[in-house]
Structures are given as structure tokens and as C-alpha cells.
Image 1 (cartoon, rainbow, N blue to C red):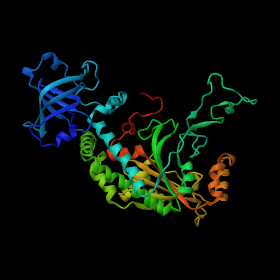
Image 2 (cartoon, rainbow, N blue to C red; image 1 turned 120 degrees about the horizontal axis):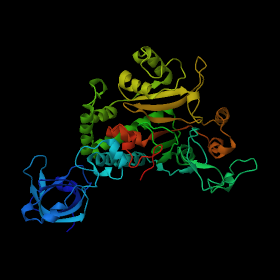
Image 3 (spheres, one colour; image 1 turned 30 degrees about the horizontal axis):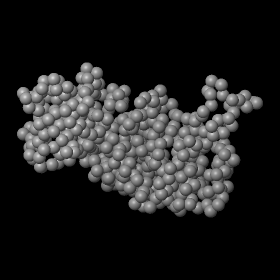
Image 4 (tube, helix red, strand yellow; image 1 turned 60 degrees about the vertical axis):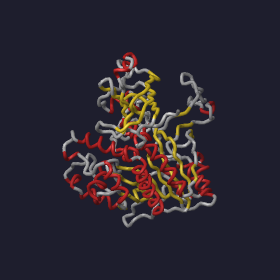
Length: 481
């Protein structure tokens, strides 16, 4: 007889049926009530033991974390909080768990402590819920693009280029670090390295994605990316996943429409696919906020916040208009912003982005047409404005509580303009000749964007630290497990 998943049994009404359940002990009360979880749901099933007729040495082995096989009868529960339970006929211990050493006891643990035991935190209700939601969002991303006939492309993880010009990259090498080969001038000789040149872990699949879009039309990548930024904030990881579509013949408006549709689609899917998990995370957040002063609490609960994004048209506003709004804003005039907005050209910080979304427009915002100087070299340049200011056809989508959720642009398809811009920012033409070929042979308007997947998971789960929405976080001085 096969075992049945707990999720299925909790919805069953086949009372009197003999069932087998396999799972791990969450709690064991009064030598009688075992709460068992098998990972299929955040809810446990209760198994009731006839302790008077069960071997005492066996009962002593029913400890938190132990793996069990229970054979018994599904019965209607008389206790509160559950509809069904199992009357145990036969109990087998599949794997013992030493209660003196198992670090996850049936009490509330801090998220900081759980990060230290990330290999075991999957076993808590909170992380069961988070990773179920993450799974649903990843599935929905693929569904969204596949339904629209996009081609999924795997772009390289090891690369010789720096897509963002950020310079904060992890080096990939097989050279002996104690005694690397040197050129005559004393520099490290990368010709002796595995790839015969200096290589790094990728910061983005975009540039290679553009190559595919220029033949296949609409493509997307969804894979790991890396930033060697020495940043220890709740918003940064050294290894994270990016969703990056690139579309031939898309202009900025088309790009914005697609990004808004994607975000609404995947959030709607998660709400439908994970109602129990999102309800659990909503209640967890409400509980957590009780300790905060009223002014710091969210106006909307988690489910309302997610529906708020799905149900609202995103506000579209230019960078130039946003700067005026921020300059006139109360926190700017009262010097409450950490970074005061004084002049056009300022790089917007998270506090400014959140003010626009949460206080001014009270809805997600798409900011467009940023100053050329603060954006990447590949973005399409606009004609200078009346003041002679240079902007690019960029678009960032800003979300409540998060700030930037999406960064994208129409790409510069004009070869001469792109070459001039590369020279200005110091990117050697010969290193990028393969990329420039898309502008030499059949160039066309095209656009794309990137979504940091963990930021999306952060928003949908209501968690506040990005390290809690990826199974094994990689951050400065931390690469455990």
C-alpha cells in the first residue's frame, strides 16, 4: 500500500479508510498527539497514538524532527483546528532525531538564527511557504513567456564581458594564485589561463540575449547572475536569479506594457496557486508588525498589497517630472531625505523611489527617460530636450516596500551612436565587436528588461530580507552549505 501525501488527506472525507503517512514530527504532545508534516503543505496532520498499548521505548523515539511511517485509520477529528486525523494502528521510526542536538525545537526561532542553519530551515512552516511561493512564481514566469511564444535561451554563466560596466565581477580562473604566470611587463598573463583570456561570472544575460532576439524575435533568459558588490544590505545578494527578456521590434511603450503584464500575471498566479501559503505569510507579517509603532506598519495586509498591484494600472512618469515632484516634496523640503534632491541629474535612491510609489502616486510607478549619464551605454538616446539635456529611453518599475523591481530600456540600434557612447565610457570596441555586429547587419529597434527574481519573491512573500527568499544566500563573507 502506497503512502498518501498529507495535503491530499487533509482534504479527504474518506473516514474509516486505512491510510499510510510518511513524514517528520513537528510536535508530540501528552504522549498521544503527533503533528506530522511531509512537506506537501504547510499544515500538519495529527496522528493519535494509543499510548497505553504502545511500547514505551518506541514512544520515546517520537521526537521533533524524527521521520515516521504511520499506518492507521482516517477519522473525523474531535479536536479544534483540524477536520481529520489518523488513529494510529502501526508506528515505525524511519529516522531518529536526537532532541538534545536537533536545533529546531517547537518554539519561535528568529530569522537570523534560521539563516545560520539554512540547511534545516526548510523544515519550518515559514520557509515551506516561502519556497512554495518561489516555485509558483518561477513556474509562472515560464508560463507567461511560453504562452506568448518567446524562446527560452540559456546564456553563459562564464563571460569575458561586463554587461553593466559595473566592474564588480567574480573572476573565473585556474591559474595558481600563489605563482601566476606573468607577461614581460609583469601583468598576469591570462593567455595561460583556462580560457586564454580573463573571464568572470556573468552579471547579466542581456547582451547575449540581444544576439538571439535579433534572429528569433522574442526571447527570455532566466538564470543565475553574480555581483561582487561588497554590500551587506537586506536587498543585495552576490548570487541571484534574473529574468531577462529581449524583444526585436519592441519600442519603449511595448517594453513597459510587457513588463507590467508579466508582473501582474505572476503575482496573480501565485495568489491562485498558493492561497494557504500566502495566507500564512500574511498572518506572519501582521504578527511581526504588532511590535512596530503604528507609523511604520503597512497600510495594506500582504494579500491586499498583492491585489493592489494586480488591479492597478502602473503610473507612467518621466524622470524629469519625478525630480520636480521630489524637489517639492515635504521630506525633501524638511530635509528628511537622507539624500536631498537638488538638481536634475541626481541618481534616485530607494527612499525617493518609495516616496513616489507609497506616498505620492500610491501605486506602482514606471519611471522613464533617465539622464544618459546615470544609465548604461547600450540604452537608446533621445534627442536633447529644450534645455539641451541628454536622456535615454530607459524604464524602471518601482514597487511599494521594494523600490526598483524592473530595470530596462529600448536598446540603441544606431551603430555610430553606440560607438560614440562606448568611447565616452571607455569600453573598447574590439572587445565588443560580436555585440556590435547586431547593429552592423540588419539592425532594428529592440528592447528588453531585467527582473531580479529574489526581489519579486521578497515582494510576494512579504519578507523583509532577501537572504530569506533564496535557499542558500551568498553574501560578503558568507558562502555556507
